[in-house]
Length: 390
Ligand SMILES: NC(=O)c1ccc[n+]([C@@H]2O[C@H](COP(=O)([O-])OP(=O)(O)OC[C@H]3O[C@@H](n4cnc5c(N)ncnc54)[C@H](O)[C@@H]3O)[C@@H](O)[C@H]2O)c1
Ligand SMILES: [Zn+2]
Image 1 (cartoon, rainbow, N blue to C red):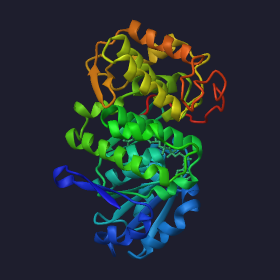
Image 2: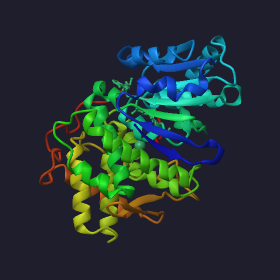
Image 3: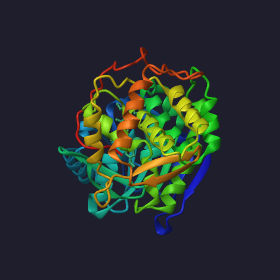
Image 4: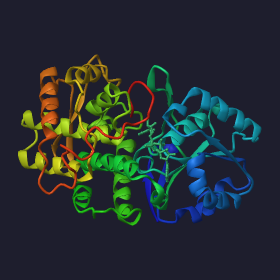
């Protein structure tokens, strides 16, 4: 097991990563022994992995299990209210603990319920998706969706610990795994050349969790560093938005049905490197190696029927705008990015045009299809929501 510290003064904690870490839960959570504990999960995750977690928590005393419904639509104020009622019925007091056991949806909603119950109770994340392990459980952002905008209602509530056991990934559907890999690649492009090289050598087919432990550790380190530097996203933390400006726009114009979040980020990464190359910020060979890395994770549903002008409009509505300007994170090399808020509509149009031509231009050596065929536009996704994702 490795421990990655996140130094935030009196809100410091660490991310522990290890195969089979669940067995060490009793010692890792020893401080909460005998105190009220509530574990929040969903039926799917609990039925797959609840037994080992329940057994471990049982060694700390009596705990209460609250299951929420699966899916992004349940990341809502209504679920928070239900959780608060459950906390109250369970006798959760201010010295108690909420354990969020699931993907990013469970983490965000249980985290927000913990942040707001009695003005904040302790929270521990036990993530079960790759995305939650490397991204959503670290950094203290918690929240729920408003019917008119995603992640509109939220708070910063740092957890007491993030406990990552990659063994949970053995049951994760391949498409969810792939979605998380795009976020790992994003981390590599932002600031970790070594991680980038490891991604280039990922075996096919992938054998989770063994093949993923090193990648997870590296991606967690990157996120930890960014969060330590800028806890409240006043500036630097925005680098994590790489690939998300166009990615969010693509999700919105396809009504959150065509792409997983990670797949949209994959396209968004390609858009970012196109803009960076056209501005001569990124050399051709770095462009090619990042593009190849995106394609290796693929295939992604294609962009057919997506109107570039609507994507452009959605980009202009980006919720992370500052002073009325959309900012883009642009790679200048593998492992280095800059943020620019002067990217013109014409540049974005140019990038979208290059994405459209991508469909017929598979890259050499990639395991993704560069999909003129494979996966293009197939498998509609059932995610009903509005606005932008993180
Ligand atoms: N707080 C943040 O900083 C932050 C950052 C990024 C994303 N997010 C949020 O995270 C959410 C997306 O998270 P996600 O991608 O984990 O989706 P998710 O939580 O919806 O999980 C995806 C699916 O996988 C299932 N699942 C979870 N673990 C499993 C396992 N081990 N085996 C089999 N199935 C499993 C879930 O039940 C669900 O059906 C979004 O709401 C997004 O806004 C938050
Ligand atoms: Zn993301």
